[in-house]
Length: 178
Image (cartoon, rainbow, N blue to C red):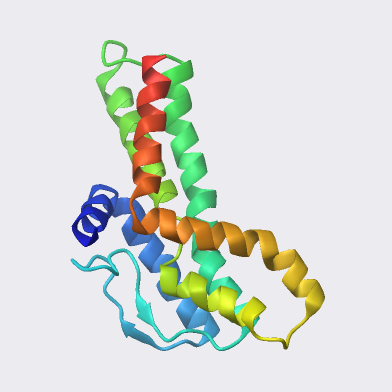
């Protein structure tokens, strides 16, 4: 499964690299030491940075959802800018080759960013453990963080087994077929 994961990260390298940058920036903001700062490595941490796990619930929440939030918010607009022009406006290579290539690249970069929105499974497990396994903490904070925590936890496993990349490829292919 590691080879498939690495292949999906290499296929979506713009999003993986940018996600690694957001994780590195979040670690610096939270004061977490970064052990291995390489963003694109050929191992199971490809597209992520090796860092010390946060000890507090709020910092674990920010470490798990902050880079995803940034990747999603930037990636969705880049993806939509390319996809809308290709799909709804019907830009083809016969209209303008330069515009067509630009919109295809925008769709690719946006989709690659959207494929890389979830944290590593260790970060998601740490978030769940800090918020729900220990009996200390704010009950209201646990309630508000429940849905994002479950989505992050499930998404980390989806990304680990390359399902996010497959879903985006299927979505784009189905959109242009039908």
